[in-house]
Amino acid sequence: MEDFLKEVRKLAYGEIEKTKIPARMQVDFTTEIGKKLAKKLGANIDIVEAGTLLMDCMVGQAVNENRQKEHVQMGLEKTNELLEKSSLSEEEKENIRHCVLEHHGVEKFYSTESEICCNADCYKFISIEGFIITTRYTREMPFGDLIKLLKNKLEKKWNAISLDIVKKELTPQHQALLEVLKGLKG
Ligand SMILES: [Fe+2]
Image 1: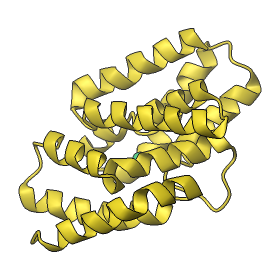
Image 2: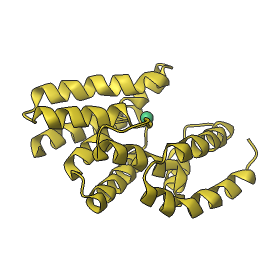
Image 3: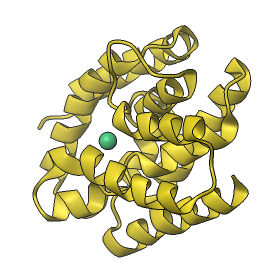
Image 4: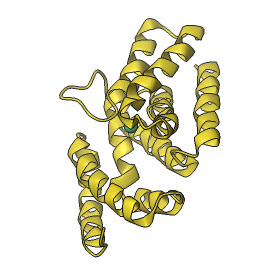
């Protein structure tokens, strides 16, 4: 698993280097949240780390090619390339694939690891820390577009939260951010 994670980090950080999307701070933040949740819930920490690094690894290229919606499929293809070269078990491979595939939420998650990746992704926009990281490091975007994105994501990601402990932790932060965004025109 350690060798596989090395390859995953190489790919994810290589894409960030190339496209600057998402910001490295955002990815590191989401990964740390994911690992914390995995520890709390007794899930596999390595699988969650692989999932949080891979789930949006192709979003930069997808945005640049104006096909952002396809980033999940593109990420899955890259994930499969790495999995083919790895010596992970079929069970682990299937789990990692689902972490990527289901990271925007599904009715019923394949695994706790997959559910954690989706919930960790929500912290990027619904937590105060994630919100500040996102606003600080999304520099290339025109201000009006950023406000629109934040408003849109605040609603979408709030609806994607499925874990009770996450909902509980983020409810007051979500409320505060709703107030913040009310004060921002865009
Ligand atoms: Fe995504």
